[in-house]
Image (cartoon, rainbow, N blue to C red; front, side):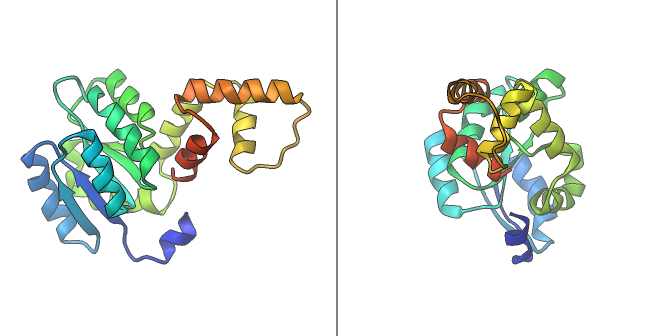
Length: 198
């Protein structure tokens, strides 16, 4: 992924805003940089996913709802991650620690931005696009914290690590099923897509 990014001078950023305030705050920040920037207001989750796939962004900024501390964004965020190759950055007003962690981990987000961080948004996006950031590493570790050490090893193998396991095929098959269940993903294809586009 990093090699692909080096071939482009800037990421293609798609902003899915729920309030015009966010669009007004983001446009000046991203508009003055070399970032390829698109924005539209989300309607239904299905429309959002279809439009997002067509735009083929590198980064999606998704504004969360304020009414429920942003938790209603989880189904949409998951679909965006499963149907695009984009990394997801949540834009949240919520200061509820549990809600922020839940939204970040369940959408497989690469980070979360608060409105007060808008002046630094371009740097935040670029760092996320180019490689690992502390937020990305921490969220990924929180996502994987539900897995046992054996399941994490199986996950690494699913993602391309050498297979040096001595476990029986039945044990490995059970561990794979457990991984899918704990991550809320249906199969190997979804797991591979999520973690290879992180």
